[in-house]
Amino acid sequence: MNFLIDQRGRVESTRVASAKSMVSLEYLFAELERVGARRVLVQAPQGLKGIALQLSEELIHRGFDVMLSGGPCWGGCDLALNEAREVSADAILHLGHTEFVKQSAIPTIYLECKYQHKIDVEQLMEKSTHLLRPAKRIGLGMTLQWLNLLEHIKQALENHGFSVLYGQHKNGRLYPSQVIGCDYTTVKSIEGQVEKFLIIGSFFHGLGLSMITDKCVVVADPETMHVEDVAQIKRRTLMQRYAQICAFRDSRRVGVILCTKPGQKRESLAMSIVSMLRKAGKDAYVLVLNEVDERFLQDEVFDAYVNTACPRISIDDHAKFKKPILSPSELMVALNLRSWEELISTDDYFRWCMRNG
Ligand code: SF4
Image (tube, rainbow, N blue to C red; front, side):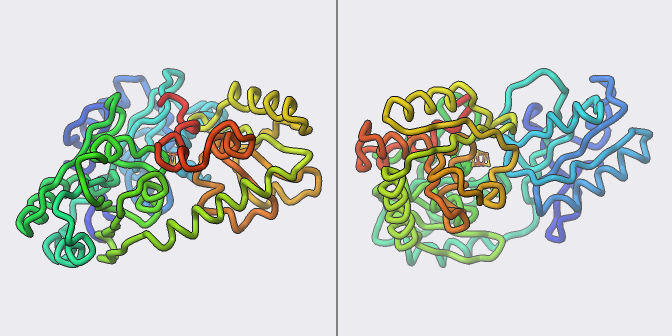
């Protein structure tokens, strides 16, 4: 039996990143047998928890000892390695993301969960064309779950008279055209050859790209069929970010957040930032957290924070935090080591979050 994920989120089919091919349940069982796993920790982001449960049932039926990871799972960076160690799991089954963390401590099988159900691509592209015209050359970026639509979408746009390009990731870590919230390398690689970008996925991914390009970014979400030009929110977001950078300059005591999630843990970066801040005359301390959550940052001890974990936290959740919270790249601007204009024209904005990037 193959897994497929249909419109109701039922598991019928999926792909394993490492194998880069369709796999069957039998293959999955064989992989678990191959690594000698009896106890399996199943981890999934919100939205795929139901699928994780169905998979778990199948595994239990086959005699595996299964546990479900109950915590949040924000990306491939958030691999439940510590949990797996704590419960002595022999393997992790991670749903919904490609491999992000290079590790060999606990065998990990990635089930990418690309959507297979029918999407009215022609209607979605018809809506998109109104925002893409009068441009002729379009750069295409997609999130993992929609990658099966890549060629169909490209063809549909070409039928409307556009020429369509998509880029490759420089080290092959992502699929051609694939974007994640902190990595836009594929689309940035074709920036000079296109007039506008079209992101197939969520607003979150479109906003990220728009922050580091002068080109217009349109987002088309196959799930909601909503199409949007993110220009206005981009302007507002960049203004908010710059305001936080300015507010940070007045801070005296700074907490440098070191996250313990495997793909977000940047200890040497946090230590360098502490010494940089001390040289700049501020009191700085490393603050170790697993979840960078505003509820844990409500004390009156720190005037501001630098977040070495996921860079999207301070961008997307900034309104929840009472104090300025900068990414490492924004700190460079606050300390006058880099210009704001330069930062927002490169993908360095997100780069420092990448452990292996
Ligand atoms: S660091 Fe943030 S944006 Fe990047 S993959 Fe992890 S959760 Fe997503």
